[in-house]
Image 1 (cartoon, rainbow, N blue to C red):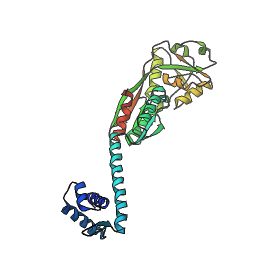
Image 2 (image 1 turned 120 degrees about the vertical axis):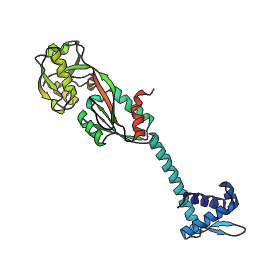
Image 3 (image 1 turned 180 degrees about the vertical axis):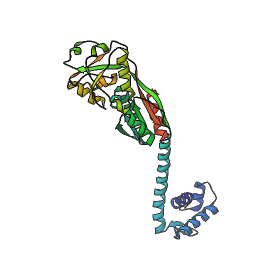
Image 4 (image 1 turned 90 degrees about the vertical axis):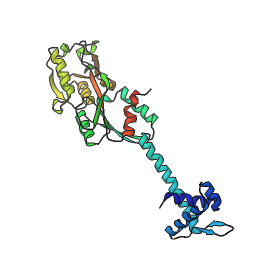
Length: 291
């Protein structure tokens, strides 16, 4: 059914006068009368009683008027919602992050995004970097915060944050009293690191940094999550080298220490699908550039 016929009928039903309705619709009366007649024929129902002196709704016409108003109101809502989704004002976005990314910069970005776009639903998923790359490729997430980048179809990357490395030791460790430590101070220590078999460039970065200063880390424990690594350090299972953002965990039983040697920077990348939910995704990836 032509939506215009509904608008024509509503105008006539509200005015109960064809001439006034035609003026309201900015058209002449004869084609308006013809459109109402076509509508009644299409429905097989008489909607209006017409005499030379008056126009009034039939009982069926009164019901149809209510339904026509609802249909047009729903259509307007649908158009408005569709436009908002296209503009990235309404919608849904799924974000994934490595646990060491949950520092103040990301938290601040999420807080500002929720305040600016309260009608966008956010789903958060904690995943390793390799899991995020696969999830991005499979279209399971829209944006990821991860520790390395690699060529992935339909995915773009940019550095979200640059960090440094810190040493974390148990609070009863002899080094815990120092203001900073040298990597050579860890030569005889047991290390807890992210597993190498997951293809983590972070694992490789830490080992290469140690080797550059004559230290071969003795890795005795491995853990996927940085928070787990910090907990294992607190349990006295060894020491570790972690991104500086991990210090936000502030778990009792450990001490975070800066390094004397200049450590390599540790990038945190933001990665996003370039072919999904462009309105919402674009709003989010530009949030960290907004004032």
